[in-house]
Length: 336
Image 1 (tube, rainbow, N blue to C red):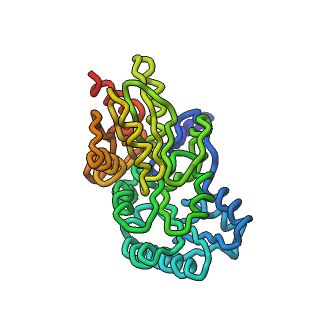
Image 2: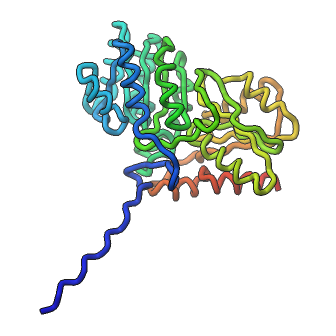
Image 3: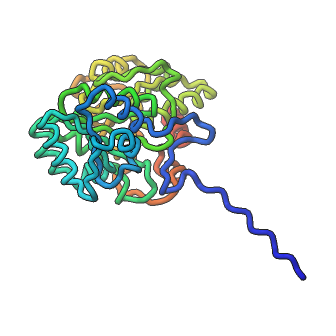
């Protein structure tokens, strides 16, 4: 009797798939669900804090808050307009609601509700949204490549693009203490740890110079600060000194810090962002420099003005020029 053939070896799971949307590199230090845990710690100190979502608690790490504070958790179902309308009403009654969903649903599907019921009324709602920019491989329906541009254009709203788990944990209590609406991009799940190595402290409206360099200055936000720091280390091998100015608050912009950094002569200034090159940090910095008549050599790294493809994130980041290797290659080309 023939023995049965051995079972085929299972293929390793691709942790950078479209579904998981991991941005952590192999072996990189991470911290699980920093937003969810930080919100729980904040809620222990402030009974006004509420957690709200539109059927995406597990995918915005709000399920951690729901377990800790079930009576302060509001599941609004698959209705983002209702989510933000209700959040506005609760804010009017003195609560501090943190309303979570995907960035595409807040910036596109519920934009008018946020504009009319939260921004115009200056309601104290914290809008915290996952899958910003190209952190999802699901294609245009889930890729919020234009969210910063949309929210920058809305009066009264503070706009934040954190880099890593360390900054998210610090930002949660800070934005809660700010009176007024805030839009914060969210990195969820196993989130990389980067900024703790730079003795970084989040301050609302403040840019921070993480490292200096004579030839290049990266001005970056979100995950592109992580990429800029990696690129700066790689460029050292070519004797290219690269500084990194981290700008996590997109609105209001830290004009003083940006102008001071860009006024240093002889450097190529490169704005790097996980967002379309239209209407985001790059154009905000460019407009500032033009208005103040500061004219360094200037380039932008960002997502193209097109609907992006679906696929695994490492492939997409290479394709659209926001991987570390792609950033390094563009810098070397610009410097000749």
